[in-house]
Amino acid sequence: MIKSLGIIIAATAILSANENPKGVEGLSKETRALLADEMKHIEKGMHHIFSSIVKGEYEEISKTATDIHNSFIFAQSLTETQRAELKANLPQGFIDLDRSFHAAAAKLSEAAEFEDKAAVEENFSTMTGLCVQCHSTYAAQRFHAFSEQ
Ligand code: HEC
Image (cartoon, rainbow, N blue to C red; front, side, top):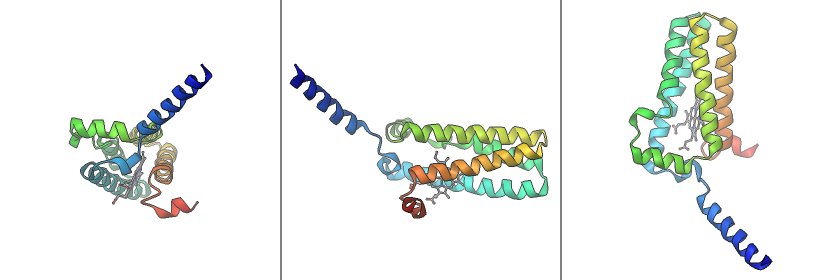
């Protein structure tokens, strides 16, 4: 009885090891390229938001933050197969961080609509922190400084 239980546990461990998401390394070349494009897009957006913050251009901040909020995770250009591929490869933690990132973008857009200077700065900083958090957890192979920490 104990022996067979052991076998079941071992078999379950092997099965779940196979089901472990591999992260971005497990994505096809095309889907990974799409992710990189999206990242460049949000990086550009963040630069633009920074410039708009220091100039008090709230409308620009709101527009760009909404754009970032809507675009990710490159929803428009994904095929059904790619969507399934992402789900199979990206760990729950990645999806949670992505969600937090998008929630912060929505909050930033709203803060800019109200011309709330402090909330704009706070949410911009939250977003920057989430870039770093996700990269240091899931993209250390791309950003080597994070793998040395
Ligand atoms: C939920 C996770 C996540 C968040 C949040 C995130 N990134 Fe990324 N980013 C990644 C991953 C994973 C890669 C590496 C992709 C790869 O290796 O193919 C990446 C790569 C990049 C790249 C390199 C793209 C290229 O040329 O290959 C840039 C630039 C980038 N991110 C910018 C940002 C910025 C700016 C933010 C925040 C405003 C951000 N990212 C937020 C996961 C994230």
